[in-house]
Length: 123
Image 1 (cartoon, rainbow, N blue to C red):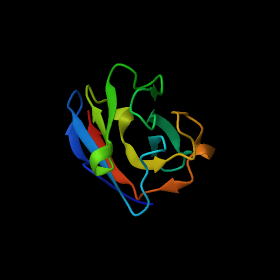
Image 2: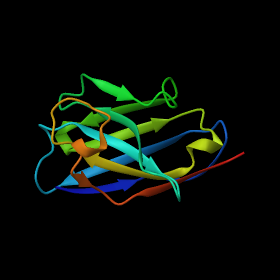
Image 3: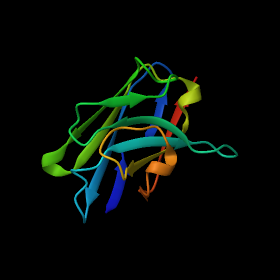
Image 4: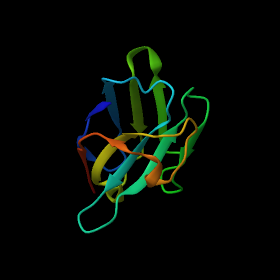
């Protein structure tokens, strides 16, 4: 499966952004999908994940209440709505497809990755 992330950009603190991830090739409809982020010099960290059905979600504590995740199986797409953005949300955001059906936060569960999209939050 090929993944294409988009929607990143520069936003002021307190603002919002919506990231999208389009999957092509092999369908990801039976797999959970997720978002991770990485800043230079640090390990990639979990942000959010959604189950194959969209009925189960998981979030990092740092984004709970501010980010929501959704998916449209009809067009093999996933979205991350980010609100109340903080400077510490600045990172390259990556979308990924899990080998599992249910949402997990374990990076090892995600063998398929897209290229990243930069999110920069100015304070």
